[in-house]
Length: 233
Image (cartoon, rainbow, N blue to C red):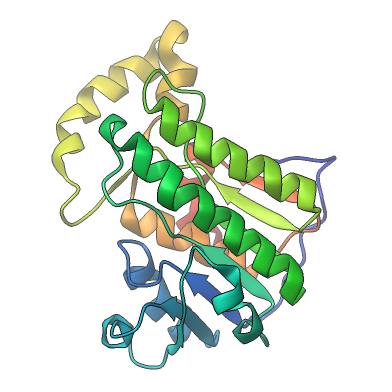
């Protein structure tokens, strides 16, 4: 399936090996992603807070710093060519609007500035599906970071999941029959697909695919593209 490509369909380049720098490596996605990158022979450096080095998988190089302050890690990004920005508030909800402003926004901007200063060739950003009838504050922060990425002129992949199913995140499975009905009806089809559920495995495969297939320009992966990521590896 064709990815959602912006900016006049930028060319996709494939490379067998990428040095990866990741923020949020000890989180829900990062813990699953890093071992898979290492298995595929991509060297990984992960930004962690002091005393959190032990949470990283074996073989991942820890970089001590603060994800909200690029000066604490920018000089340790090299030799990475790929930057993956995963930092964010856990279990987002409408009640966490202040936390999105205090964590997600400054972390996204700090990561972007650091990537530009370090000469990163490909920036990968975890955003959120949009538009949506809820989570306005969360979407606003992620949209602001997306706009900053475009303004920075970096080659970038932006992933837009809505809800990621996996360990500790299983309750939305009860909604799957409703999603099937909504996807079958023309008035609700587009929204149901845009705000559909994806699995943790699909997200990890999407991130791996983005690492191994960098773009020139901006690539945005919506829920339908994330769901088919395993087929492209």
